[in-house]
Amino acid sequence: QVQLVESGGGLVQPGGSLRLSCTASERFDGRYVWAWFREVPGKEREPVAAISSNGSADYDDSVKGRFTISMDNAKTTMYLEMKNLKPEDTSAYYCNVKVFKTPPTMAEYWGQGTQVIVSS
Image 1 (cartoon, rainbow, N blue to C red):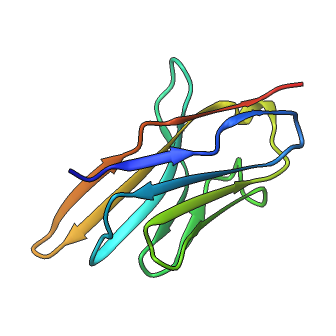
Image 2: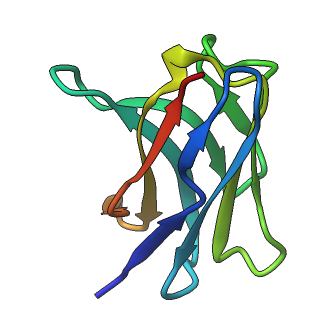
Image 3: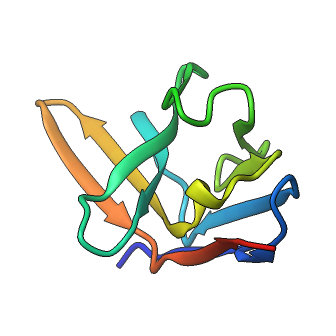
């Protein structure tokens, strides 16, 4: 069973920074997309940033210019560098991996979530 383990959440002041990490229990082959989602009570879990096996990265407009997604060289750990944090960024953050194979099929994995609280 694939496991995704997240860490790095915590309480920070507005304008502060955090780095989230997500480490997979195994390496993924083929085409894949790693992503960070966030979820607050009463709302749908929404994507924040994503990075694919070809290196392309995408960001939600609300975090563009403030957050940076990246992978380590081993391709088993994903990071989310968060700068200039705002109270609106307060949420549970979840790691997600989608793996695409031939014939077309997809496997999806989720981390357990890590809480980020931005408050003075």
